[in-house]
Amino acid sequence: MTITLNESQRSASTETIKTARSLRRLYFLRASFSIIWVILVVTLAKTNPAIATVLFIIYPAWDAIATFLDIKANPPAASKTPQYVNAGISIITTIAVTIALQKGIPAAFIVFGAWAILTGLIQLILGLRRRKQLGGQWPMIISGGQSALAGGAFIAMAHDPNAGISTLAGYAAFGAFYFILTAVRLSKTIKEG
Image (cartoon, rainbow, N blue to C red):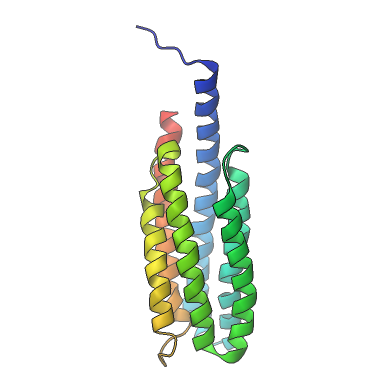
């Protein structure tokens, strides 16, 4: 028995594979950034407040850039509203963290925590939306939920005297882990296409 795909099915399959490839590249890039960020935090930020400040600001700024790359990776017909909202939140957070750092670490932690909650929820929504089309989104779904919970923890620990940028390194490391898992899982979608 021969199964033939009509033109619409072939086009959808090709678009899915193209999207999966683009997202896989982006997820590996995001994981690489997070790993480098964690290394810089662990090796330099504890002894150099200026570097710590820059790293604190760069993290949400990078998320805004990565979100625009995510928008480009999606098919033209796909709704990109969550990504645009996420990019806007990350741009505002970058500015807000810059201002909050002038008031001190507690204020910056509160801003960073609110950002982690909002962007985590958006990541959760995107993972749920993409699971049917691309499959393998469970790491992004878990990561989004975990990010929202971590954001609440950052807000709760904002006034802890031990809170500092090194506290955020674990958050970034888990993010890298989930991006790698999703990228690897997208390889299966690409092979099956």
